[in-house]
Amino acid sequence: MKKNIDILIINNCPSFYKINLYNELSKRCRIHVVFIALTNQVVIDKDFNGHSLFSYELISNIQIEKRKKLRSVLRLIKICRSYNFSKIIYGGYIDIEEQMLIWLTAKQKNCLQFESSIKESKTTGIHRIIKKIILSRFSSALPPGKLQTAVIEALNYKGSIIETKGVGLFNRSVARRLNVTKNEEIKYLFVGRLIPLKNIELLIDVFNRNGKQLTIVGTGELEQSLKEKSGANIFFRGFIDNEKIHEIYQLHEVFILPSLSETWGLVVEEAIYHGLPVLVSNAVGCQFDMVLKPETGLIFDPYSAKSLEQAIDEIENRYAFFKKNCSDFDFDKRDNEQLKSYLNLV
Image (cartoon, rainbow, N blue to C red; front, top):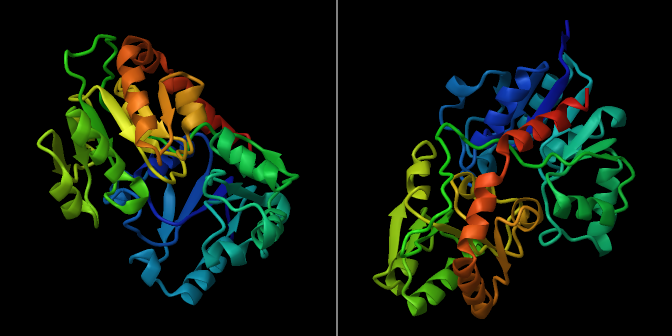
C-alpha cells in the first residue's frame, strides 16, 4: 500500500543546510526525502542519520560520481511509486535520475529547486532548447533569489515561480554579534574550498600588496601553491568543522568571497549573521538578495585587482554603516519566508 505524504523531495546529497531546512519543514507538513548519494563538493552533514527529523532514504552510500546510475534510476522510480504525494520537488535536473523521473511523474506535481544564476547558466543556442524542454515538465519552480529568477524568465518559463529567499538553513545555534564598532585593525576572512573556481589567487595578490591580515579557511588542490606565494600577513587555518566555524567568524571583521562562479553563497549568509560586512564578486548568486538590497557589503569584479582594492577601501571607510545593516538583517523573517515558500506548494 502506498504511503500518503505532502511532498516527496529528491536531492543529490545530504548537505547540512538542506537537512536543517527539511527538519523545519517536516514540523509543518509530511515529507519524505531521497538523497541520491554522497559528495565532497559541498559540506555534507556527516551525521545526518542522527540529525534528520524527517523520513529519508539514501540510494547510494558512496560518492555520487561512483554510483551505478542505472541502479540508482530504478531505485528512485520504485521509491516514487511507493508514495502518494501532492508535489515532488527536484533538487535539480543535471543528474540522470532526475532527467528520467520528470517524464514519469505528472507535470502538475513536478516542482524544481532552481539554484543556478545567470553567470553560470547558458540560455542560448542548443542549451536554451534543451533547458526549455526540461522546464516544460515543471508546473512550479523555486529559485532562491533575483538572479536565479532571471534565468528562468530568460528561458520563457510559463509555470509558477516562488522565490524561496535562500537555498537552505545554516546553523544558528550561536548568538549574533550586534555591536557596530570596529577594531583598530580590520581582519579579513575567506571560507571555502581552495580550488581555481574560488579565485583565491586574486586575494593573495591583493593582500600581499596591502599587508592587511587575511585568514583563509578550507582545504583543496591549490592549498600548497597558495601557501607558497602568500606573505606573512596571510594565515591558513585548514578545514574547520561546521559546528565550530562560528568561532573563526567572531575573530574577524570583513568576509570576502571572490568566486568566479557561485550558485548562491551560503557562507555569505553565515558571515552576515555573525556581523561581518561582506565583499563578494559579481559572480555570487546571492549578491542582490543578501548584499546589494540589504546593503550589507559591496560587489567587485573578480577579474580586477583594482576593483577589489577599491571595495576594500570603501568598506573600511563606511564600516559602521555596513556593520549595522548586517546586525539589522532579520534572519528569523527570512527563514520563515523560505519555509512558507515550500508550504505554499501544498
